Image: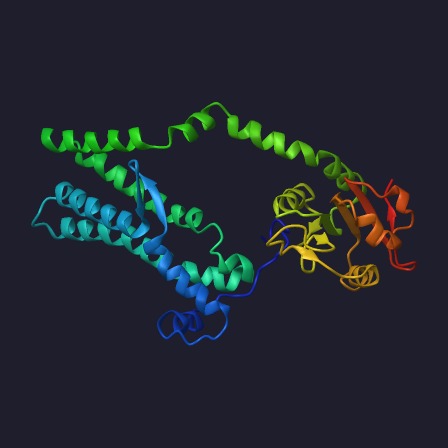
Length: 315
């Protein structure tokens, strides 16, 4: 990071001992305790599709453990100390990494996520699948190695491997091979080209940009943040949608006055405001802070004039 000059943006550090107390003693009185409890229960309650069935992560973990025991018992010859050590290592290390990962995933939610995202365990399945993908790779490689030992073992290993392939999400594989995923991504990102070009043309790479998109659930923000690099588009103070909530569960809106908004933009040293989608009521509610409200439009970039306390359209 130092050699490349990458900007460092870390959230708060994970407090290991504090987390252990919440996990075992349940001594926290804030929302964080419910998050820790939910992360513990999720390992047994959340399910993943495997071999055509919906199974919990716990049952999948047990199944993989039994497979590793079977593999290690058939690969390594009994009696040799090195074989025993290898057998233990091949079982313990992959299993232990899943246990540690599942144990501390609650800490990640508590200390690195917003209260809303932590409370719903946002993307829990996606994060847990990362750990199980590593475990499953070890299992598959072990099955192929065990297949070379005898005809019976070879038949059993081949049967299991074929079962995995047959029950795999072939639709995702087909979409990957056909580059459908790339086409879909290009189609989504094409809608943000105009704003990206505005930022690239005006900003110098070191500017701090406030992003607005009425009713956005996060997709618009993250795409624009990526497109604007190396300029710094940060999570705005409270959200990226100014005005009242426009749908149930809209936690990304900020209902503040125009005067409060321009005050915060200046105090927090923003350089520009990028608007992807202003919304129908934006000009009526916040038009007073723009030099020319008639120039207000979507996919536009505005310079913050600190002296006059207004936003001016970039050309």
